[in-house]
Image (cartoon, rainbow, N blue to C red):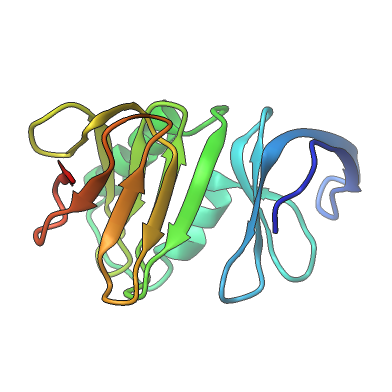
Length: 169
């Protein structure tokens, strides 16, 4: 669902403190019934079905729950998340059929890979891990499983077969 700009107050069940979220015009519900919000304070946040409020780091912990990875790779993924997503507005979110999660921020496209727990960052440009635009917009999956990038500014792109680049279309 698309929401009007809103200010929402909630009571955090863990800390018992009231908090305030000042959000942009984006909210999405995933297939498990969790709500995803683009917020000014936390970048992207998720509200699970039980309505507790959590940030992207909490989500990542659950996303990789049954995934084994070396501590160094885990720490690198947390660093990437912090540098590319924390406290940045999110423009769109896509959970593709295979379970990977794609998130468009103001300037990057971030992919959470379900089977490995890895985090890939796509930037504007023409090489590997790029998209053909200055500013990300929407990201969608068509009925054939193709991922499409529809920018605010620049060329639309189609994800290549190796999922390492959005080629201009």
